[in-house]
Length: 275
Image 1 (cartoon, helix red, strand yellow):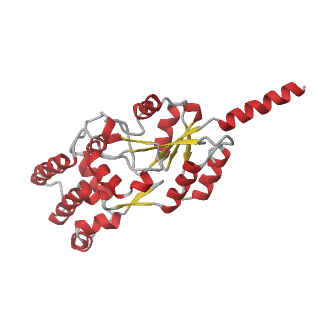
Image 2 (image 1 turned 120 degrees about the horizontal axis):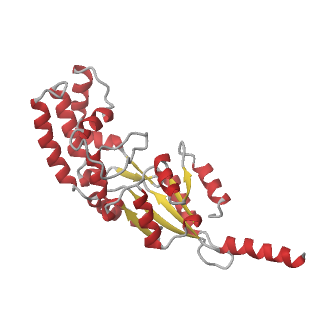
Image 3 (image 1 turned 135 degrees about the vertical axis):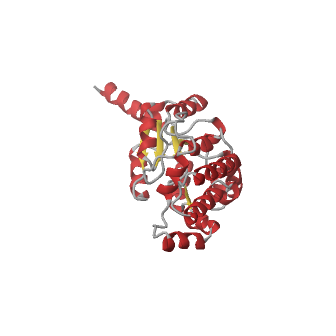
């Protein structure tokens, strides 16, 4: 009986000491886009003209995505990547994030398509056409995008705790891997702005470097193979359920941040043995 109890304690201690692999999403967890900054680059007057002369809501994301969907309407190269508010990204944006179409090529393709669609009366007004075109120019500009994404302090602090966590024998409790759907040009510029935060990660994988996007299973399989992960001892920390579903298909555990509740996320990490 005594031997059995000691053996169980040994197994528990071994499980406790063995490191976990934490896969951190960027957007909505550690970083967050500043949409008002991008809107300022577009120009307030263009939103006002659209609002008051066209009598439309200034929240034009649905109209923007609807237009972008007409550029590559039948493309099924990548799965249904989404936004934080549950909208599905148009195919051309998934290609941009995967690095298969560069940012400035997206702008060029969009400009040509705008001319084509304008000839058939697609746009409700010239104000709508101008606004959408200016938004596209701003959102796909690497410098503008890199300058309008900022750290989330609560997320950074939690990442620091996980990076500093140690086992009883002094070894690191976790390996922290950053991952994101991010185009390579703006990511490079952004990473240069926050070296201290990126130094908290043991490594980083972005879609634009590997031509694979979340939540496609290929994205997670790439991470598993690159870092020789044991999926059952790995956790994806993300803010989107669609990304979590993709990870679960590869047997990776998931923690989904909801309503910016970092206290709950920290408690969940403790329960999982990461803290």
